[in-house]
Image (cartoon, rainbow, N blue to C red):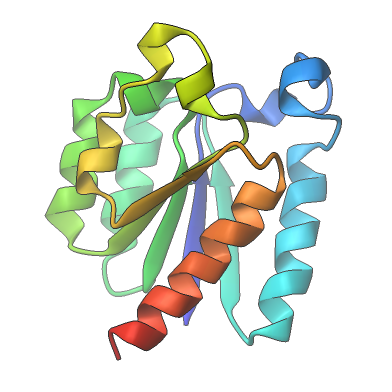
Length: 146
C-alpha cells in the first residue's frame, strides 16, 4: 500500500507556530514518526506540504495510479477549498482528513469542513498522533475493502 500525506498552509511552521495549540513537534518530526510506523506495517509513505491551494490540487491529481490513499491535513483550506474537495472527488482515491487540534472545540469557522464531504473519514484532536491514526485508518479501511 502506498499513501500520500498532504499538508496545507502554515504546517511548515509547526514547532514554532503557536506551540500551545499545535504542539512542539516540527512537520519533519511528525514525518519521521509516521515513517517509523509505516515501516512496521510495510506501507510506503510520501509527504508533501504547500502553502498554495493549486499545488495541493495538482498533487491530488498526480496521485492517480500512484497512491492507494491520501491523508490530508488541509489546514485552513479545510474550511474554504471547494477546489481541493472537487479534486479528491475527481481522482477517486480514498482520502482521510486529519487535524492536529479538535476543530470542533475551536472557533466556529473551523467547525465546518468542505473537504470532509469527499473523505472516507476524519480524525482530529490527537496532536501529532492524528497522523498515525490516519495511517492506521487507511490500513484498516484497505483491509476491510480488499
